[in-house]
Amino acid sequence: MHEKLFENQKALNPENLVKYAESLSLNMDKFRKCLDSGKHSDGIKKDIAEGQKAGVTGTPSSLLGWIAADGRTVKAVKIVKGAQPYEKFKEAIEELLAGEKK
Amino acid sequence: MRKYLFLIILMTFLFVSALPVGAESGRGTDALKENTPVLQAGQQPNQKEYAEVKDILRQKPAVAEVKETVVNVGNDPSKGDKKAALALIEFSDYQ
Image (tube, rainbow over all chains, first blue to last red; front, side, top):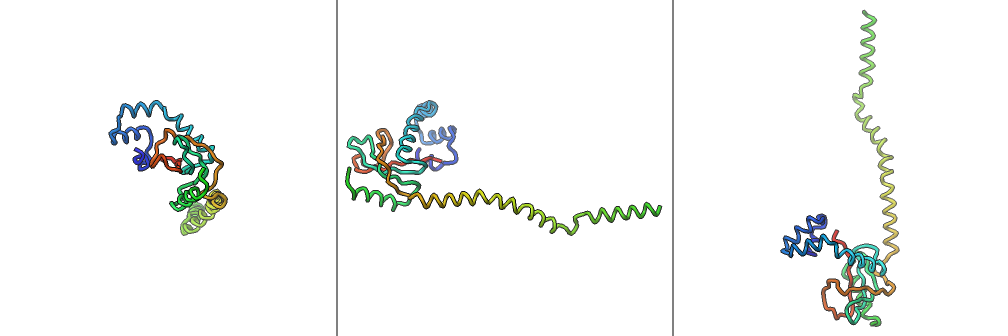
């Protein structure tokens, strides 16, 4: 579904979303309920707020950080703004790995 | 009768000379003259934006340090080894 949405960036209204779900044989009952209830909108807003706190001002942006032992949080220490080439990411990652592990 | 004939000829002459015959190029030039300031004015917002974008590109590096911020990723979809040291969190739009 993730790929389908990226492939159809100009057609993302709710009717289209339903069509894509159907074409992927998703459970339509669950899908419709999920879509209509808006139950993920809070989670999305929280994600946006967290991103903004760390300095995200637009998309695409990537935060680079250390995964906590329990895997539930990441301590963000770098931000990559925009769709940067692979080399920029590689450089940033190598910098962190070469530096002190926190 | 001749007076009227004269008037008719005079009016015809005045009418014909007022027609934009052979003045096509003149009218075209006038249109250009009128539109040029409009076009130039239209360019100004573009030029301003262009200058702003150049400023932005100069000031803000693609990769920057951020003050340490803890981000919750517990329930987020992910790829790769969850026991890895580093994580890359992607913020993006489908549009």
